Image (cartoon, rainbow, N blue to C red; front, side):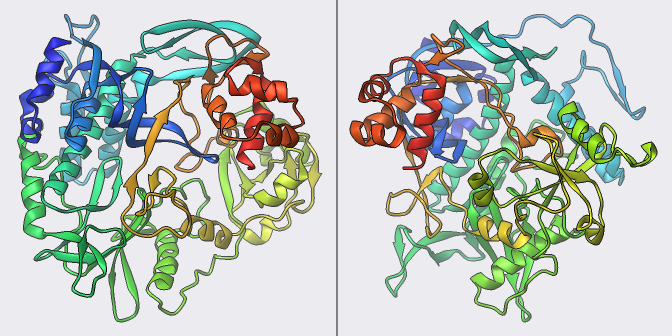
Length: 584
């Protein structure tokens, strides 16, 4: 711990641009956060459970990785309170290592070379030789082997109420659970944690570098940042900005292009790759005069230029839309996005720029998801639907099906679960004639019992998305009207809950039917098959009148008082309380 404290005591941003410094970040620290900027997974809104990099305060100490602690120091200027620390030290060589020949083209010997470095460099060679398929395979290999396999878990249901052992931080406790996560062959979370934290540290270094130059950014994704810049610098109107234009309008400073190049140049010092193959670890993707940006949230953004006819999309994000089956084929190479995504952003931008509407031809088509049949739960009702269809024409395991996005408000009013599927087709006219089956009860419908959302509905929700993880310029929670320079929110933890690996990827990418039924296993100390306690729920209950909550839920005031004090409650009671509070 003394070594870690000494490291942090004199740390500067310049130190992080020394490649030898990174070799000293293989540690974890038990931190008592107090307004430290750290990754926080929590409920930012009743319908938004996510991870964000925000100010965190917690009486209960929490374990964080070395790179995350360093990132917090860079962003706040203060050293977090560290109670304990330990370092991960490699020892010896793993038995059984041997050279591999990837796709009969790429030879890598992990005993002599850094495997991941070799894979990335081989990917760049393949790209240079126009071997796109090989380059893409190497990209997937690097991602899967450098992170994914170290956190592989295989969830399965247990007998109701089965006792399991839970490991969280340096604690171990028994609880009753319906889902248990079996470790993958290479499971070792400390390595995976250090890798992802290293990525966050790189972004923190970039954010601090931009801030030191007086600038700001439009968006920040997992591995990128949209820096506000103009060829010769200047100011850009922005609500909540720290500067003022001559007219009195609030503004932010735009860095000059040369400022941005100087920042990028600093990252060359920590480039671990062959400079001839990978000349930059931080690459300038788009930097041109007249380039504009429009961001709905940190990962929903578009870069565009104004033209005589309207706008031209230069780069488009499809975050939050990847779960939809494309209503139109084609890929726009210049915007690095599917054609329909480009048309979607053109529609949004034309409205934002007060231009004549540009409505896509597919706007009023029903929104669908294309998913893969991977479970008997889906295959059985399909067999009933297709019992008179010749076997060769039936949907089989790992075939595709279509799932309509039903109107969620009307769906909630029905009360009973309904998830409709139909055999896959690309012909919209045929789709309107097909039958649908509810995978929950096997009931067959000749037409949708609940109207399907159209792409127009999806886009309208997409464009007014709240950035729940941030605060508005005035410090209040964001809503669909929020505009301007957002702030980091402040999180005060009332407790730490152990949960399993997040499996909900519906709003990003994926075609597995399990995305329709995401589950985040939660493991609580002193939990049994019927009872549990939830400190976060206790805090929410304390913020509401006992009598008012009793009337809303039908529970006795005694039960509400037990919830306020954090006592164990029946799980059905907890669920009912959570629903009542989310509806308030």
